[in-house]
Image (cartoon, rainbow, N blue to C red; front, side, top):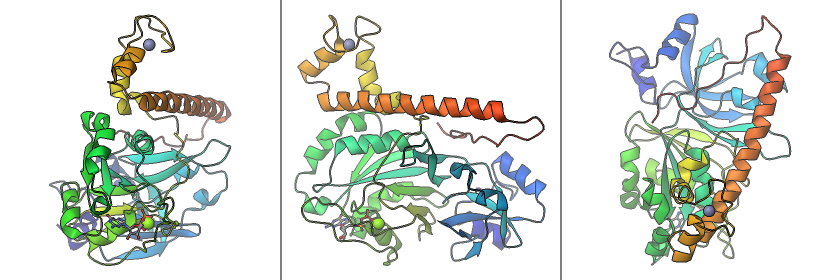
Length: 362
Ligand SMILES: Nc1nc2c(ncn2[C@@H]2O[C@H](COP(=O)(O)OP(=O)(O)O)[C@@H](O)[C@H]2O)c(=O)[nH]1
Ligand SMILES: [Mg+2]
Ligand SMILES: [Zn+2]
């Protein structure tokens, strides 16, 4: 393998036995741009990008003129974790994404925002202090679940003598096959519990509210103080948004880690699958006597029976209904937008390539 390819591999480039990328669409893209070379987006800024072609080899590049048009859909611009093709100091192509983690952008108009691309694992980080909130964790799980393997990381275990109560509050999440890990984010030995998701060539993203300990985890995994961390306010355990941009960081283990700023609003894009995150709730609801049961006071309602019996948490059920409504609302807007775009399309102009979010997973 050439040293260039080995350097790329060290930041997640999937190399097959023949030295070419394992992913056929990437081979095709490379063949179509013989003068260009691949690089990975490590930082996205308003004016351009920082990309890397190896662990210690990052440089600035300009974005294509197309992406600078105000109307260009933001989720189709490269984001952190994306692989791009570079020619003459400029991005000339975006390689198809193997996975994406997105949210509905804050604001009244429907827009998607890419959180990270080409990610294998999403660490949903939540402190075991006053920040602990099973409902918020569920919301994160819903948003990241389609793009990566979710893992719940409960930080500040050293400040919490009773992590078992938190685990009990997340029993349904664990039952769904999601790993839950409690750590002291400041302690290397404790953070080693995450090593199985941080093997060479893998990419993980940290998501969670501000003050949860994402940058602390990053620094401990790195072994140096790279990301600024913030003191949390005592009264509500909330952080002060010390991390202001997303960054992809190669770790000594050979994995890549993406640290993100806390997100105040986590709106679904409409592409999520509520049944994925709430399989237990849907299984109970399937037992109701009436197929269109509203789970209010119908006879034979399995949901009411489960809540009364204490086997289904009422808050979790209410949250399921709320998230389902949000996802359905966003899905309707998304469908409308796609229909409108379809009508506007003039013949002869290639449609923007849609990304297959789930390609190669599950
Ligand atoms: N004792 C303890 N403090 C932690 C832990 N994780 C984070 N902190 C502290 O919580 C504060 C916020 O952490 P930070 O990493 O900036 O959170 P971020 O906003 O998610 O990046 C900092 O003062 C950290 O030192 C932990 O596991 N144990
Ligand atoms: Mg931070
Ligand atoms: Zn019912």
